[in-house]
Length: 543
Image (cartoon, rainbow, N blue to C red; front, top):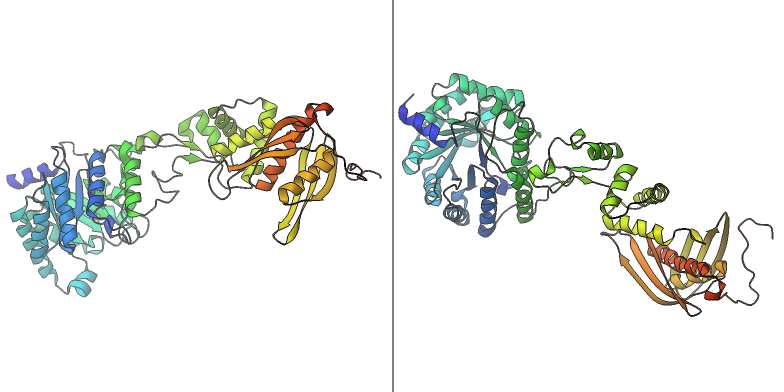
């Protein structure tokens, strides 16, 4: 092993620890190749800045020869990140002189520039894409690395489609490019074809059979076509790779690349199995994920590992109860370690009373057992009506129970027919103690009809002075809150009702005001006077 080559290999390692991994982020190059993910120069600089704060070791800033804009963006990033601890700035190049010159021009002003040269080596690429023999591939690779090394000291070489390249030929190419000056050799699973055991074996073979392999860092670059990018990358690390190439949110060609956040947190969470460390500030993972998502317009799926909206969310009652008692029962990572404020107990139809009570306490409602049970039953009913339950829904639910506690009348059924060419009609069934009463009425609109029907049953009539409706939560399924002010023969009383159905919320609000009027006694209310009208009897009663 030559002294010069040994020094070069050590120089690209970010420390003396043999278990320290280099995190090579290619969000701005491979990630931008996702359909629709193109970024302008200012956006690329924003992402590069975020990656610097995340403390990645290498930023592959682009493919300079691809376009003048790409060249200028890589150059701008190289010049913008001028801090002493700035990461290596890398530009990609084919094994062609014009590509290499363009990459060198783009990264030359970086504190630590790198050129990443690649050339396909698999039989299928040699035959159909390059139409070159093995010896021609080796010759071109060596010439490209030699030329790049004359321009920039830090050179990385990738034998494209390495996972489908014959092992013996892959060893031959690797030995040749290291001898030519490559300080990092990247082994890409370009089309996501590899299986973890197989890919690990490829890295192990290189470690065992390439004589000068210790003069370079072995890197892995895995695609996710079979959903194995992270697993393959970790298998590579277990077998001797010390650089991992990845992207934020796993974006990239086709099904994407190995996701940085998944790699970093897998290494951290299973440190018992992977005794390796990175320099990543994991608390910056979620902010960086959101920035990339917003800039590229590629939204993260809800169930995405680590950074998905559901990654630290629990809806199952059993899981919620466990998390409330001891977080580690159902969480293997702390949400704050990736930049998430806290775990989220999602209240839905699978939630238990423990989580429901805990959320109400967070909102300032400490209910006794009986009202808690009643509120929980109403909550379950609400869950069947809407998918997402917001805190505002819970507040509305509790407030609805508080304003309707011990009611004189309860709404059992409401049916309204209305239209621009129909007479609005409302049928109402109310409960009073154990008896139920039914009546119907018409009106100028559905609200007028339902209030008249309530008047006919209760014998109490109020004049509506003010009527307001608003959504208490988000979305089309949002609950509506109706606030109503009524004059009962000089006594002004208020009512409030909540429901995902505005007509039902209106009926509840008016009935709430009627119940308040009834509670104040006959002196505060005016009995309806409808000549010839007989007050309705309980449904099913004998005439």
